[in-house]
Amino acid sequence: MNHILLITDNPDRWTFDIPSATVVTARQYLTDPQIQHLRHCRVYNLCRHYRYQSAGYYVSLLAEARGHRPIPKITTLQDLKTSSIYRNISSDLDDLIQKSLAPLQSDSFTLSIYFTRNTAKRYERLARQLFNMFPAPLLRAEFKRDADQRWSLANISPISGAGVPPEHQETVERFAREYFSRGHLQVRRRVPPRFSMAILADPGDPTPPSDPKALQRFIRAAEDQSIEAELITRDDYGSLAEYDALFIRSTTVVNNYTFRFSRRAQSEGLVVIDDPDSIVRCANKVFLAESFERNHVPAPKTVIVHKENKNLVLMQLGLPCILKQPDSSFSQGVVKVKTREEYEAAIDALLDKSDLIIAQEFVPTEFDWRIGILDRKPLYACRYYMARGHWQIYDHSKKGSARFGRCDTLAVADAPPEVVQTALKAAHAIGDGLYGVDVKMLGDRPVVIEVNDNPSLESGIEDDVLKDALYDTIMASFRHRLENIGK
Image 1 (tube, rainbow, N blue to C red):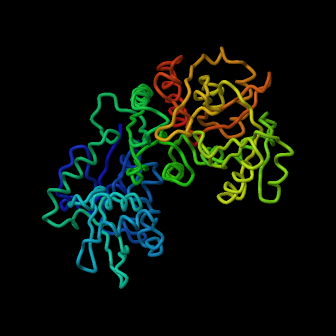
Image 2 (image 1 turned 135 degrees about the vertical axis):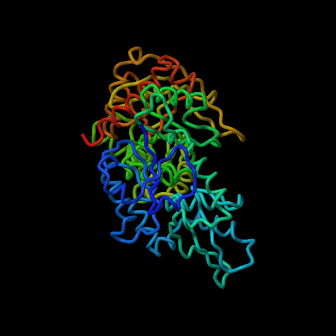
Image 3 (image 1 turned 30 degrees about the horizontal axis):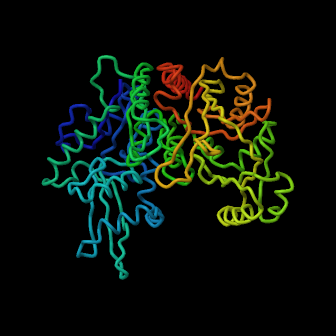
């Protein structure tokens, strides 16, 4: 069973009624053997003081030692005391601060953050982002405006329940009830789940890796594995520590929020797919080229291009050939050049963006094999056909939305064994996560185009053969990983 503990110095000062949570004194939490040995416990530290070696400090410290999940963590408490952290906030957050506070007439402003929210709706997004940066149940942030009319975060600190002003108490109780009523925090279940999972998705993504129907199938499959899964978005960054696992079903990019989620989840001890190493390795075509060569993975003839060797590429590859940005994906950032003039224009443009790019021989095929791999085992096999009249699966040449080719799915046993084995070899060099390996047949020889983390898993496509077993297998892998943490 999941236990939600609200830790206070004095329960008489905690006036809020939260049915799903148990109020415990700091002394009781620190000294009661029964509490010490609780499992699947989430600890919300609402003590008045968190100074070094105080009771509030030890609540967060010992919660981590016991395998409980404290909010705030010791690292958060340290961050809250470090003024340099305030100066290094992201540009996105700085833009949000300027936009949110611009209408104010005064040169100072105090923002209260109660369970990720503020009593004024216009500040809720700012409150959520500050909670994401400094996860604590109750926070108070101080802002100052300088002579250049720019706002900055001057201080942010946790507060206790006693620090909530009387006029806010009714609203804060409602916020707390709503916060603790979220699916993975519910405790009133006949058969409570053993684990909790966040599935990161982007509702605004026009080409997500999993459609809504597939996401719901993942949630149902997780339930069968005693995992409580729920969808989260990029706004839930600060809540990651409340889960046991993270499954990323939003398109991964190294320099966007998905990578930050993956890194944060891994540092918090969550089981995570896609893990940060897989994202970094699969996202960069230069890494893949080096990896394939080192591990003797067959691939199209490839040259890593830089300014010193760009004039030698055509002698090695001939024309036409393919030029790729290192972080290209979904057929974007990939150029087919047919003449020397096209090559010279494209190569200079690409090298202006990256010191290294990839050039490959052109391998025209009717379709690419996509072999799905999980835990170093083949999971599914698809054929992704080229878009009509185009040399890629996705055709971005027309204005508007991209066109893409048809696809069909086969049982792994019906795919050519040499394709499956080659895909396994390529994925093995990356890790033991979930991958989609793209393979072309060059005559009678399979060659690997790339290994994708975060592969597409859509209803009616990749699940066409396995049906629910596709989702069940992935969630069973999560459960196995969760049960073997630390072993």
